[in-house]
Structures are given as C-alpha cells and as structure tokens.
Image (cartoon, rainbow, N blue to C red; front, side):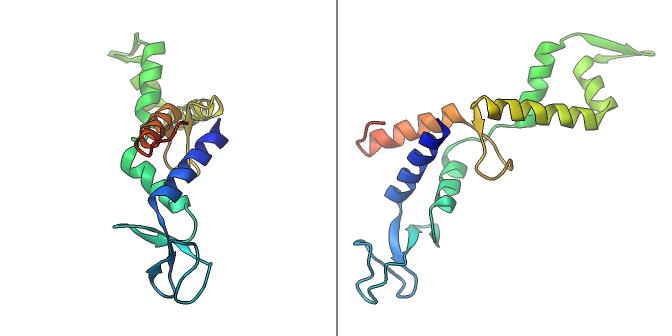
Length: 155
C-alpha cells in the first residue's frame, strides 16, 4: 500500500519537473544536455527550484496540496471521546482529559506518541520526514487520484 503510494508520488514528481543540467543551467528535455552531453541531471520544478532526485519535490507537493494532521488535536479528541466525564480534585471539577494532560505531561506525550505510532502502523497516516509531519493516506490518495485524472491516467 505505502510502496504504491510512494510510486504514485514519485511518478507525479517526475511529471511536474523537467530534467535540468546545472552545469549549463539549461533544461534538458531529452535526458541529456544538448550543450555538454551530460546525463547527470537535476530535476527542475518551475517557480520553486532545482535539485537532484525527487524527494524534495514530493515534500513540496505534500506541503502545498495536502493538509498534515494535527496529532495533538486528534489525540485529545480521541481521549475526550473515550473519557467524556469530569474529574473532581479537591474542590476543582475539570474534564478528565485536561486533568490527565496537566497532571502528567510526560505520560500524556508518551500516550500521544503511541497513538500516532498505532495510526502509522495501521497505515492510516504516513510521514515522509521521519515524524516531523504526518499526512492521512486517504488524503494523499484523493489528491493523487485528482492529479492522475488531470494528467489523463488511471490509477
């Protein structure tokens, strides 16, 4: 599943970029620079820049077109749905989730990380930057379906 998603993202990245010879600073549409005959080409994303490989293009595509999840908010919403009751501590009555979050922030963060890890293990979310940001697989799929339809392809 995720391998297929990576292939689709890579395919899109190649479609929206052009081969580029940095030495001659020119586009090389045939895959070989017409000036220096080099085939050691970068990828050019117009109005963004150029670099070797397409990982940076994929990162740019995701940042521009797919909304990352807010793991903190999603975890808190999940916990609120599991523990909707209030808790009384001495003379204070607070919702249980707020009490847990405030009383032991380290345990809260560990539980949140386990929640995110379980979503990732289940294939619901994916990160392309080692956990810096997460995206819903369904959102990426939907975006890629739209792009493939625009390019006239079937997935």
